[in-house]
Length: 462
Image 1 (cartoon, rainbow, N blue to C red):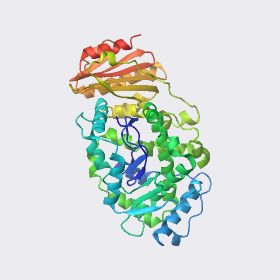
Image 2 (image 1 turned 60 degrees about the horizontal axis):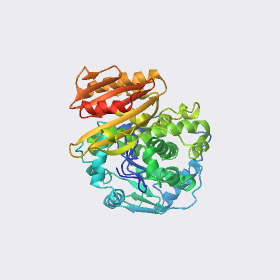
Image 3 (image 1 turned 135 degrees about the vertical axis):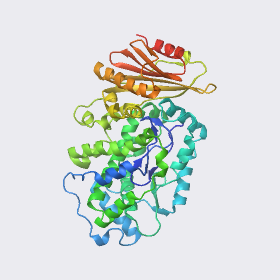
Image 4 (image 1 turned 90 degrees about the vertical axis):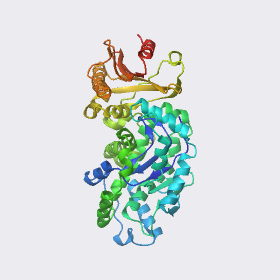
């Protein structure tokens, strides 16, 4: 499992943003975010209602001062004036903008993100995804990320160099480049005022893995904040004819690369922007950007709070700390690949692969979790242990009911291979099980053979 490295904020269009966390929390390569094209978001952007401003917005600049009018420097200056006023944070230090061709930008991005990420790291990450039914163990995740960071990127902000890199064919910003700059400039303001390296604990690799659900929630704050600012800019300051050009560009985007990406991965990539935006907008409605600023001092601690803003704003619901029993002694020949967290969003996303309409209900009531993935390199076998605690016994029982539907679809069989009441297993080559280990606690277990399931259950016997 690769550990967290330096972070760079990329903008690859106006659709998905990738923290590149998998299962809500599995750290893969990047730490801050990559925005890339996706049909669902493009449709949402064009159809979603206008953001209701909190209070009065700053007056627009004269149309003659807005892009595409003026020199490139003047166009950047106009965007900066508006974003600084809308976000109500001064730009403490100007950052240079570098205009590049698409090939030049892709080369920089690939070198930046893959310099410390090896094919061996990618192979382990594929094992983790395979444990959650996302991809086969043989999936070439390294090639996926190479393509991901090579195709369709519109620009990024590098906080280490304190510089922008933007694709532009000429000295005039098109509408997408205009809102790209508005979005990324918001990240600059966040960094200058709230120290995003400190906020995301990027100097502490272990924290990022051990507290992955909290990390995903913080990432949602960062990207939700920037998306809200971008939306306010687009709806209130982008010239009307350029807004129409923007929506026309959405309709013409080439989405072929993303058609083969598993839905689970797309959901994880979109989370910081879609759910992050919904959460930040809810906070914004309570007190404008002053309330959003306060999130950086008192951030949400779980994706549950992101999905249910009331569990942060009105009835604060903090997750329980969950631990796992050491399992190495009953797993000879296996090595631990990762121990981390799913979070409510990761659990919902896992269930959505087989029970889309009931996944939210199955994950609702989540109150904490911890999981481990083990791998036998010789046999190419995976073991998964997920321990989940629930708000109450009714929520725990509802999860097991939804999981049974998931497992029936996964196995292609109506009846389980094993059912003792507390433990129910389905089989499709390997075994996939759910177990009750208390009124408000459940396990998800995956193993290649029944004897390992029995050994693992013995670790959690009351």
